[in-house]
Amino acid sequence: AFFLWSIKTLVDARHADGQRDNHPFWKKATAPQRLLTASSAAIGGPATAAALAQSQRWKSLLTPSLVVGNVGYAIATFVGLAFYGVFR
Image 1 (cartoon, helix red, strand yellow):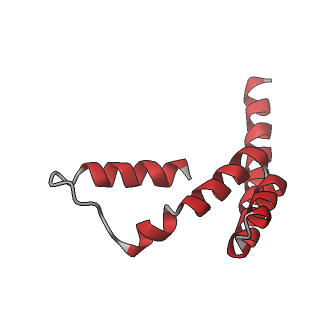
Image 2: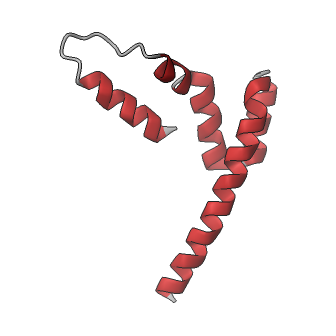
């Protein structure tokens, strides 16, 4: 979520005339509901992200929040094992 927001900010900063990039991809990718759910999945894991999506009645974000949270756990597990192997 932070990565997408950073790219969007850099792209917007390139427009000297103050006009924002109204490309449909950026409108969908940086919707506040998606950014909040992605941040919740990255920080708290799939359970908190699913609870946030369910409590706000964002049914379309329920499954992606679970997927992103679990993929984050899977990646972080192997990154943690790699750090252990390097710094052992």
